[in-house]
Structure formats: C-alpha cells, structure tokens
Image (cartoon, rainbow, N blue to C red):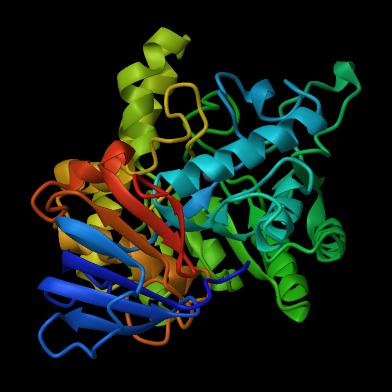
Length: 420
Ligand SMILES: [Zn+2]
C-alpha cells in the first residue's frame, strides 16, 4: 500500500493515542512520508513549514485508525446458512467483498483481520488492497475454514451432492486436519480459522455447548500451521472447546463464550487474545424473530450473549487481551455497523470508552501481530488515523456515524471522510 509523500499536520483535536494514556487536549500529529513523526501537545511540537498540508480536527477527537478484529469480507446480507456459500457465484461475492472492504475503511477501520472467507477471496482482496487496486483496511487473511465432518459448518445434506469446499474444509481425524492446513498453506492464508465448537444457530445437532472437532484434530492443525508460520484461531463457545483450543496451542480464541476458571488461567498463561464479537448476539436476540429464528435459537443467542458478556468482563479485568469486531454481514447485523460493537461494549458489557478504544486499536494491531507498525498514534508508526467531530470519550456512538468523520487516513493519505 502506498504511503504519502511529504508532510501532514493534524491539529485542533483531542488525541486519544490508543495506548490507554490520558487524552491530550489541543494536540497535533505530524507525519512525514506516511509515518508519524510527532504526536502530542501543540505546545512543544516541532515547527513545520507554514504551507504544510493540514487537517483541522475542529476541536474533535484524533484516534488511531480502528481495527476490525473479526471481519468476514465475503458475508453479505446473510439470512440463512446457505447464504454463506451458495447464494451467489464466487465472481459476484468477490465484488461484494471489495465493496465491504471499501465500506469498512469509510467506517474508520484502517485494518482488519479476516475471520474466514469464501474460497480464497480474502487472500486476493488483501493483495489487491496492498497493491492499491482497491481501497480497504490493511488485511490479515484466513481463507477457508476448517470444521469436523458433521460439525457446525457441515450443513449441506448429502442428497444435494454438493460439498462445502468453498467455505470450509471438512475433516475426520488428525490426518485430514493436517491435509486441510496444508491446502491453506498453498492458498497463502495467515490465520487458520477452525470450528472447535457449535453455535446457538444450530440447536439440534451443533449447539453452543457441542464440540465440532477433537483435541487431536485441533492439535494437528496447530502443529502443521505453526510449522508453516501460520497462526490458528477458532470459533469457541463451549467451555471444553475453549480449553481444548488453549491446550492445543491456539494463537487466538474467537468468542470464548463460556470460559471457566481453568480456561481463564490457560488463556492468561500465554496471554492468548480473544475477540468476543458480541453485538451480533444482541442483534440476533433483538431482530432474529423477524428473520424467522425459532425460540430455541433465540434462547441460545440470549444465553450466548449473557455468557459472552460475563466472560469478556472477566478476561479484561484479569488483564487479558480483547479485540473488537465480529460477524458483520448478516441481514440483522450488516456491514457498516462495525462501530456498534464499541457502543455495545460500553453500554451493555460495562467497559469504559477508553478501554473499548484500546481494544479496538492497539489490541487489534497486537492480535494481527503488527502493533509495531500501527494501532496507536505514536512517532514511528504508520499515520493511520481517524479524525472525528465531537468528543468520542463522552459519546462513543459518534463512531457509528461516518458523516461525522473529518478524515480517515491510511499511511498519511486521506482515504475517506469529509475532507477526502
Ligand atoms: Zn465469524
């Protein structure tokens, strides 16, 4: 991805740098050739030539670009499981994924980590974004997911005589688990996304307390992935599935919904990050009925929502690492709503706005393994910035309204917002 040439000055805003440090009123941010050279109080900032291109933050808030830590670029208006794979041909889904990536950037998300993709679309989307063919967040790709045969993602009945190969690689046993990871090595993914557990969406055979992979399969995935310098994560709701993932050496856990004391100890021992992705559950409970969800499914989502909120609180209070994001692209939880996750964590889960902003910026960059490059507004890092009218700490909902964005800046280049 190209970075800017020359200098940029951002002035007249309160700086929240993403590290959790106190906000800096009347701050300025200087960048040169796309990298931050100074971020802090205006008083004491080095002088810049008077003709330096300048963004006036209008007394608002200067933040690091946000990180969507569980992004499904290929999900679009998903209202049934089939919509995840066979609703549209892959050519059209690729175009939708590019549009979703552009939208995420306009929503202030300058980086994102895929939580799984149809075919290998996110790998190529990442390449296209890096080559400035299309605009979007700096991406970490997952490609196809891995799930046990008969598990959550194996829903096509055999009589249809179609597999799931566009969306998931279905495995039986450690040998097939290794073979699936080896396919992903060739695809070029960075994160191997697995399905150790079920979900409230499938109450009959794969509910949120069901295991969809064995420990041996998960361990084989980790050994093979780590051998090829890939990381492993998984959809983990059930208590036992979370612990299996942590014992198998997973690098992250998605959801960690029903974590117990032993799971928390395992998590903290290696500081394994978690992306709870909870606003989806709230949206499912609130809007699921009008999309035909049964009472059992709704009850399962409610239990997931409450369990997940409690687990997220425990993990944060114990000093764990949490990323913000998750599962946007469903009909009742569409792309573009990403910042509702942040509001939800303040209003429903009880995090402070500052805690949520740290999760949504520097912690997200840590999860991507790129916190040396971005995630906070500090000298030396890429100038990935979100400049918002108003006081975001006083009203986290401002981040939901992109008409209030003065600028979304990536590598010192204004990509979206009012001044674009
Ligand atoms: Zn997901």
